[in-house]
Image (tube, rainbow, N blue to C red; front, side, top):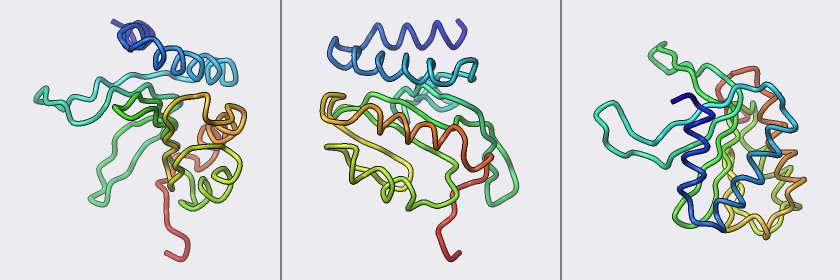
Length: 150
């Protein structure tokens, strides 16, 4: 099964309200970033143990670990959680940018250095959320986030 089929199967398996919210975000991201690579991870590690929520990934970046090893990842991730929806914006050079730039205007969401969490789409401004996604899709050039002054 390719990524598009995995994403569709995942979305189809979600409860109706959450499915509608994730589909809306997914469709808008694809519309704004046509041709961007889309990936899907089911949240299982190599042994098959569930270690995280299933995630739809957009874009590509390479993560370099402290030991010098690398792995491919996404720039922006979308996941349904038990409490709502999380949008991961990775690779920003400044881990205060997301909260500083978007928290004041996004609505009822928790915004950290790399994640925007909210209960349902109706409580956030979708245009502001998509602006944060644009930042993640274009910024950082794959560099890992760094804290200011370090």
